Image 1 (cartoon, rainbow, N blue to C red):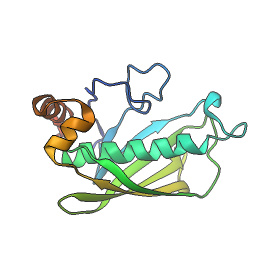
Image 2: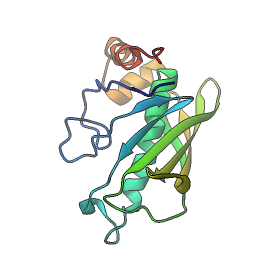
Image 3: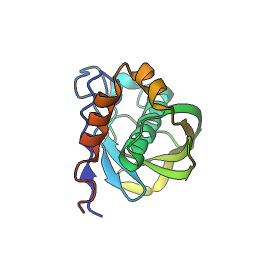
Image 4: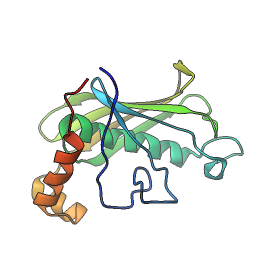
Length: 167
């Protein structure tokens, strides 16, 4: 499957993915088999120790890839119920990273996603891994959480699903 970029028509100012948030990461996502991925390099001003990406930014990367995995694979929004992160090796600033998410389990209202971070030039070396459990709220709760009515939410899903079958 040739990677296909997932459109991002979300109207908000999400720190992780909004192209309108000039202070955010402005992540873009591509579909992959069973999930999605992004590439990015985190700048020095988001470090913890000099030269190393702040742990909270790493958590944000994993949370974002997990959320967009739900959107790209299931056409649904969820809320994070539990997130476990294992920091394996240092993640350096200004280094091209590949962040991946993949659905590992799902049932009607719960989805488990495995997420990983690798250096883009060495995808064999795992830097960080995560596992998150996502709750899929009913439509009325989702409307209340997002502040968007059902029609606007459906429009978002329709736009992110466009050309999903193209390879």
